Length: 138
Image (cartoon, rainbow, N blue to C red):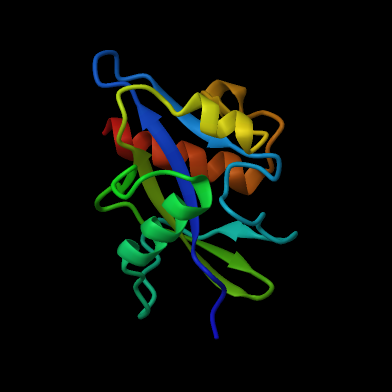
């Protein structure tokens, strides 16, 4: 059995285009940190297994205490992380509200960070954020 998919959760401000990522106590990869010795695979890596995001999104909404439709998958984003337990798919999801759900983040002892605030994260997390940021802004 392959490891469970992980999520990067972001909010993109509709008027300014400002992008912020949800950072939990364990990092920006929800809802479990990536194991030590993890490495981001090249963008052209394409495994035979693909993950459909619907169930992953709904599970995340429940975990975060959000209503159905509170997050949505960001289309055409795909990242895979090589871990000692096997390849882990990382999906990208966006909060659908006008503003980031700051109260939800606080309740989970997290916060929203800009890409420039990611210095304390692991290298694999910084690389995932960079790839997601580039994807969202084109």
